[in-house]
Image (cartoon, rainbow, N blue to C red; front, side, top):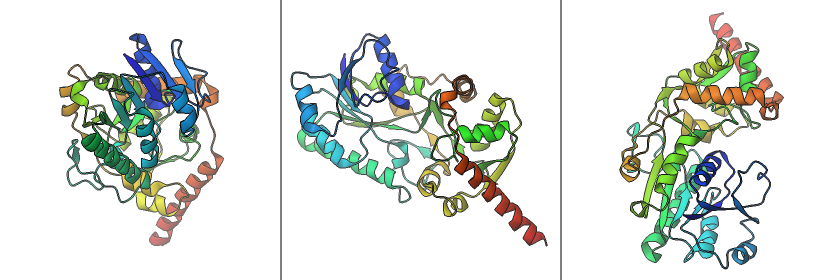
Length: 338
């Protein structure tokens, strides 16, 4: 198989890249080269900014592919560019959308690919929906061979998967745990969530590549394991070898008092209970099984980050904000009791 990835070094795409090369795929990555230092041998890099359409067109002038996958398109204009570049040059165009595009709030917590797409809380999700609509139009009217893939919360060894964190990453929450400081969990922590290790996501994605039954289809790829946010934070604390000191705060309150986009990230995503039905994926990829249990994946992530200080990015502004939120809640409780 001959494939081209636009991006190819992110959380999701890096695992796919590794597994494809192990299978002997002829793989090209088109990116600016800023994160290519850790690429496995065998990758063919086309170094360019995808937004420089003329340069990209020149680079691929004599190339054609079995699969082209765009991991970094967020608005329809970027897919209009992709259509101009790759129409007639690929047998399958795969677009990485988002499970946050599904109906929010849900009328049924069980999500299938037939669940409506609607998210009034998050512009990111609405843009993903618009991207999907553009591609479906091109498939119906022009025969452009699309496959839409919707990941949910996918993680790797470089970042701890969490609900509430600052703009600089998730390490500061782990640092608070290690210092026995209280950490914030949105809501009461009992809503249901699904996390997927990127190595498992890669197995499903590769199974869709070159799959004639996936053309024109939309498919989500997630683990079948469902957990609560309390369980997620307990698992992280256990991996760190500490006792969890949790403070539960409503998502609407967190959104109201933060500069972070918690309206989108929480109210439009993580505060809602979700359970994914992967029946469609398993029909298309019969051998797909997500095998990395959350506690196993979290332990790998924690161990990797503890051994690699470059991933321990501190966020003092977020740390101060957590203390302020917790202090405000304590003061409110004390005031009411008085």
